[in-house]
Image (cartoon, rainbow, N blue to C red; front, side, top):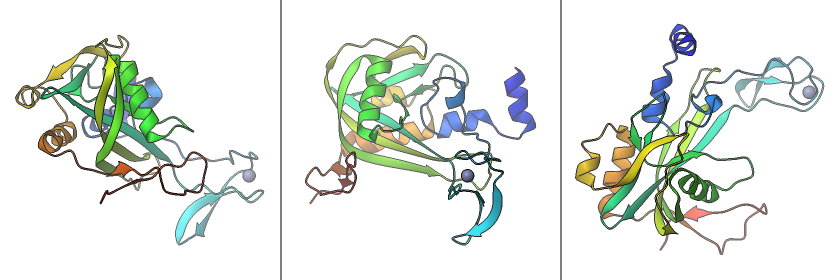
Length: 225
Ligand SMILES: [Zn+2]
């Protein structure tokens, strides 16, 4: 209750993130899109100073080369169709308790987006999958220093194996449902839009493993010819 009142006082609606954003609800730090700008340098602890860098007012450190380039979060969701039904999970806890959505979560540091969605689906549902393509991307910038710039990527997945098994801490119910059934659920419009768009067409950005990329962990998704 305290946290709820806290959000209301800040005029930051925590439910806005749940119904329009990434399907992340693992731990309190993943329940909202809120952040706090740095006051002191995270590298050397010197107090940061405001100055114009690249035509934008930014905090930078007068002692070392650190510049606060912004605060971003990256999440993924996965649409998995199987025998004309799509995999959905129902949130076990507030915020958003009872809402149905596609499985997903935040990308870990050092983890590729493809690895992240495979891991999230396996953790939440017990189903082993493989990404086919990227079918949607939701971008949510913010001018407020107290909100992260949030990007959410939705994959089309294919099933490899496993059996349905809900991760009890996060998922109260799960299953495969027809499009008609999905439309009767309490479901975020972003999720329903991705499900509807992917029902008949599965094209999207696909992994190009032939590109010579800079960075050992780099991957490239692009349109296919
Ligand atoms: Zn510094």
